[in-house]
Length: 143
Length: 352
Image (tube, rainbow over all chains, first blue to last red; front, side):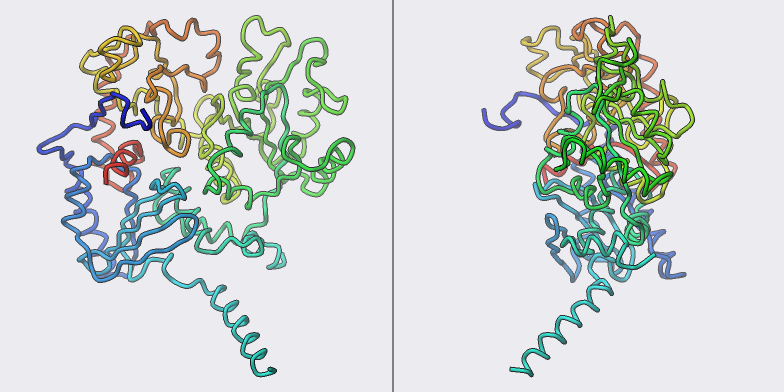
């Protein structure tokens, strides 16, 4: 016996299931995304849904994944564990999954925005990078 | 305030990237079921804040609470909290000892008077003038009174400082009491557990550093964001309880099938904590998942509530429909607002 999966415990989902393991919450989430996207187009107001705090079954996740699909952008960020940023088939709707160093999910968000904040280069970093580059080019010129 | 004094600048100097910081805030906001947008506001507020001075006093305790926070997997998001606070006094972790250590405490108290956060683990013995636990020749009782005066707020970490814990258990030979039994004129937050979950300690500290105040507390001083539900409410074995399927011994067929441990004395139904959702050891499992009932270690007087193996006498049937309605109601009210279990997510994460 070398992992929890070898312990004979049956895990069943306690959520009230409708059909094929669906809780019915996927519909609510899709409608929430629709409302957020409408608001974003109309007013520029960004929005997000924290999937981590919602009771979703494995089947719910599959339906969400299939429905939203993969869009044109798929980015990996490597800071204290990886972070995956994927644009869905619906531009402006992003799926962000944050992992820790042990690759457990620590946050799972759907964001409605032009580009998620964590993808942007922080302004302070850009300024510091510029200073470093100036130093480097100065040093090269001196040589 | 000089920009170089801000937490943001200090983090950069420590080699913590701004993206790491944003990720920490996102994880903490998700953990505390704050609105998703709160992570950006939190990151912004934190980067402009000064490092929070923290003075940590250990009284009649076993150091398990400090172990919980510091011995988690390394490096972890939880440990980033140490980048955000200035831990000015902690007997186990500080390099200084003896008079130099006590001087550091006095200096921190003077320089941040009225602003520092006081963390206490361990109960306070009051019998015989408090002689049963002293540090530097001063009783825990006198030290608490002295240090509480200049504190902005006090966080009682662990069941001992929250409710007296094991030292308080019958016959309580040292007259052990909790922080809130003594301190009545300062905000006191209890973060119980024997020990508390590392993320819960880190989350509550991050909240205070961000917002400059304690989160909303329940009737016995616990932060509602982590202690609103019972272990039973969020237990993956709950459906077996609802179906009336119980393990009768630790080696019968029911136990092997993972049925409910209620009849083996599980205190999950009366214990408010986040073990079933956040879990332990980096999200691996929690006691019930390992086959043993909950001991109720985060509840007041848990050591004196009879045998750990005697079933609870309280009928629980009335809970069932309330939980079900709560779960569905959260969704009906709007998915964003539902501050519900993360447990399901862990299983989903494993199976994806």
